[in-house]
Picture 1 (cartoon, rainbow, N blue to C red):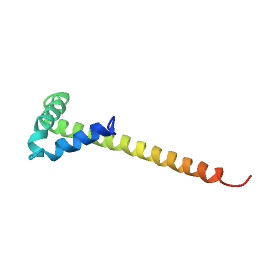
Picture 2 (picture 1 turned 30 degrees about the vertical axis):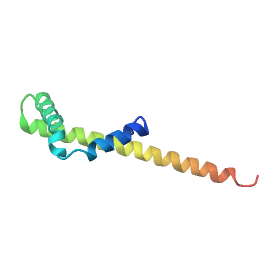
Picture 3 (picture 1 turned 180 degrees about the vertical axis):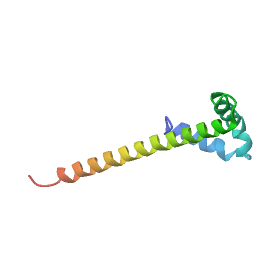
Picture 4 (picture 1 turned 135 degrees about the horizontal axis):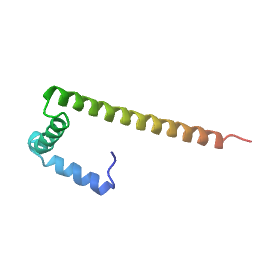
Amino acid sequence: MKSKSPQHAMAAHESWAQTQDRTARTANGRKAADARFLRLAGGDVKRAQSLRQAHYLRMHQKSLAVRLAQKAARQAANSTAVHAHEPA
């Protein structure tokens, strides 16, 4: 996901650069995600693990689709740009 502005990206990088313990910084988020999957699985740890894996596979699939669409758009733009310079 892209940042809304270069300023946001700079601030995020500067913040992470100042972080001594990344694991500790993200601990609350990981705990919340674990609790969410466990809640969705009705307390069953095995089902929660499967839900987590399905979630990450779904994110991977969406990311791949976006990257492929961006690649196709770049190729189309390059193709258009090449043809624009050809004599008629």
